[in-house]
Length: 121
Image (cartoon, rainbow, N blue to C red; front, side):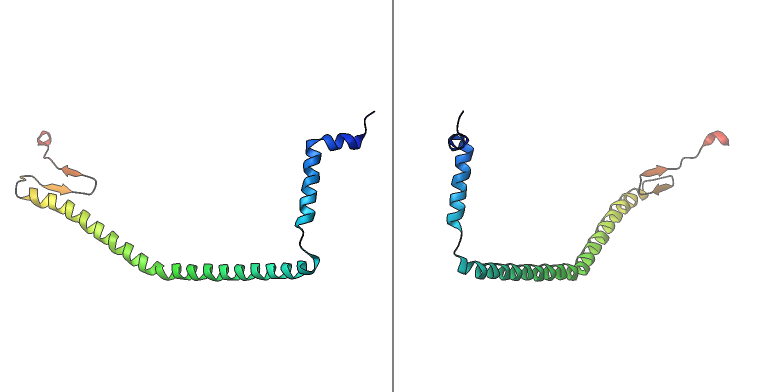
């Protein structure tokens, strides 16, 4: 029979795990600074969270403050578009008004002309 420890040492995954354990044990900081670094890290993290929250609230308030101005601007633009559309519709009617012999109606969907029906008379 073969020795299980000898098989484990030849296994590539086993060797990689052993190397990883050795590197992890070497990378550990000294025990005296461990608690201090942990507290400092948590304090830094907490300060960053507070700063991020304050910045988020600041930009949220700026966005809310800009909403009335944006609404006013969009309302003016919509009125301008409606006026332009009314000019386009009105100009077509006034240009044909002198030439038409029959009554004309202009509506938003299109133009309709009412014709006299001679069959009923």
